Image (cartoon, rainbow, N blue to C red):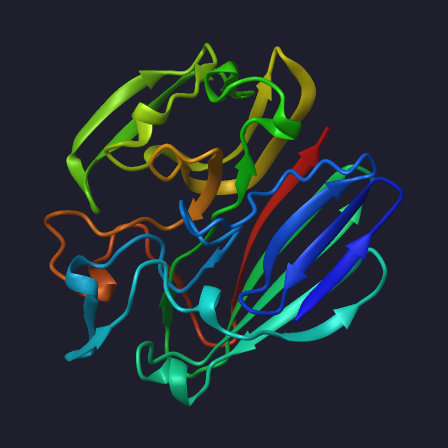
Length: 289
């Protein structure tokens, strides 16, 4: 089911399947979010939980038991309940159930909240541990934006630049796993212009180190663009499918398994831990202009 929130500037459609934003429309009819054409990639802006990326051999062990789970976890393919809604904000909820327990043994509650404030869509991912044991998880977001925006210019006319202009650790991949022994410093004082070839080996991933970070997608050919501010972020990804007319700006609180992963969930790099009764918040804002 598609739910809609709106204000004087934007209209946002969100699918209860995955609590996934499927379009963000301006008053002028410009849709910023990728349309989900299966030729390239069928999704729009999935929520990643309870893992980010891929597990080695699509499995992990916990307390001596082996569990199987696909890339980015199961939340993106599950129906969420709407627990709070008004004209400009909405909150979705997913709880542990018999199906999730087959692949993930924890008693969780995941709330995904969206709120429109002028030209900004605020997103809050809120994880609750409702079990009696420590809970291990990762979480992230995967929004895809049309490039070019409103059909203006070519893919290579668009750039991504960071407000936090400095050098970062870039983590390289032996797809689909991360090579944590192959980390190099990358200078991001200048914008990075998009090319399809830059994604042929997989996503570009930066270690953010739990900082607030703002990235902006724009072009000199148009006044349209998107900026993302993510808070206390562990990793940041930029990705596109092969030769596809979109780019994803991805805030992650977790990361894919490394090539040398031992498969134990408690040893997974980037895993988050909360005790029983505790919660975890991951937040980011999208500003559309």
